Amino acid sequence: MTKHKGKIQNRPQVAVRVAARRARLMKLFAEGKSTRKAAKILQSEGFPAASKAIVARDLQAMSREAPACVEEARAEAEHELKALKKFIAESDMSDSETVHGLLAIHDRIARLLGLDAPTKSIGVKVNADADPATMGLYARFLHETRHLNAEQTEQVFQYARSLKADSGPVILPPESSPLWEEEQ
Image (cartoon, rainbow, N blue to C red; front, side, top):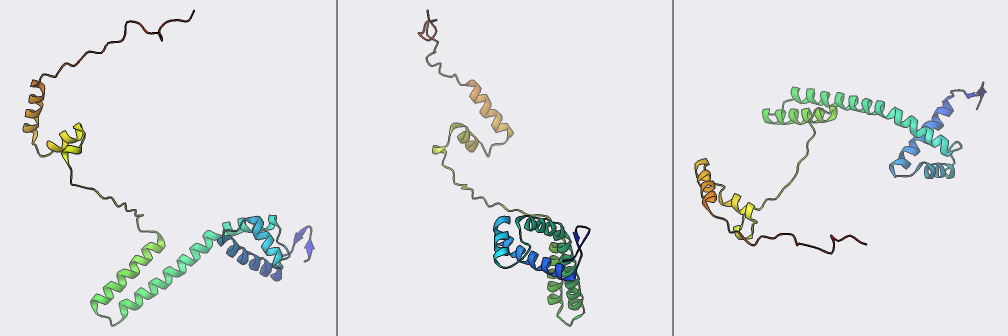
């Protein structure tokens, strides 16, 4: 490598080595290898510049380049899907086959471009068989009055107000307690 004022000149062979190292790194990172383990593997495979610092720098560079690569792949896939859409529209397929094919391609393009709204589904199983005998008082009251209209519900409230509640034993605090006495 020829150096010019402390920097390595851009040479095709250097670019090829860097691209090969990054391609191998991509596979290693996809396998879940750490930067340190990836550097050791690259060194054992004969990559001359494979220190942990260089691997970390390659990872940063790949992270910066990834969005552009994704956009390129997305644009290419969109172009191919649109060409396929044009082909189907101009073909001699029956109308239902053509419509089905066009809709399928339209859905793929929409997913590719991120135009579909995100979806999330939650499955819930509800047991509608309720046994009032096993319910708490409030749940049972709601269950028993669920089909009453407003007038009937008001009658239930009037009846509840007319009932005299049992006044059970009144529990008062004790006159004295060892816990209340101060230590001397």
